Image (cartoon, rainbow, N blue to C red; front, side, top):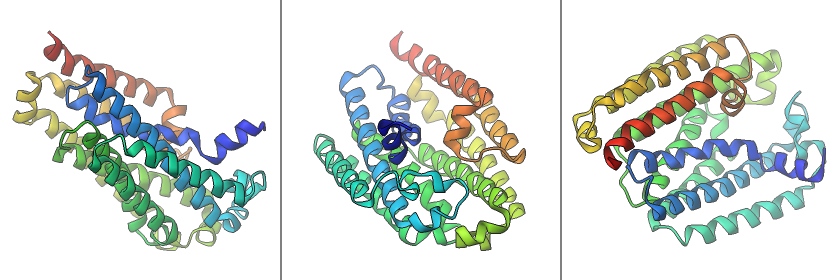
Length: 294
């Protein structure tokens, strides 16, 4: 692997896909045509990419010994010895400093939730990931904070619907990842991560069914909300629900077939999910912005 490839793997650049959640408020606030709002959304996106990479590095430093015993995580740059701990710490400090500078160009509340995101992930690394259910709630909170920070970056208040839908969608993805890790690790799961002693696949199946159902219902209710219909001057947003439903069901199907459970890997590796996400995005743009622009 090249030096660039090693450092891209260290900062987990592929996971930056998760930070696209910061753009949700931009899209659903009908501000996609405002240059200043677009710029602020891009700034908070870059800031989250920097801090999320810092969090990943901190986690890898903390877990370096246990990662060396894991069949897949032992290939990570720190666990494999491709990057020194000192160098990794330097990258973390550099990224956090750059994110702090970016946050100074954004509204205070956007920077505040960026900092809260870092704090909750530090707690997750130090303690939260060993606490059953709390581990998934910490992951979900990270997605919610992305959305809230994205909203405050463009100076709009995040709606309850977008927060609730994001929360349960992230819980659904988090429990799916836990289920996949549990099944793949099997007997060695509890040795690698103690929280797996309190999980079992059936319990996680129930949680996934519950959170996926609530995700679809909450998004559907958002689309049918009279205030939303009035805001966008159209009742056609409900026609985007099938794409969300298909994406959720497709993810469930892939997990129950015991394939890769990491949300990023699934989203970038499955044609069905990619297509449903693309169709959802295009349909939302058409429904929301045609009445606004014309």
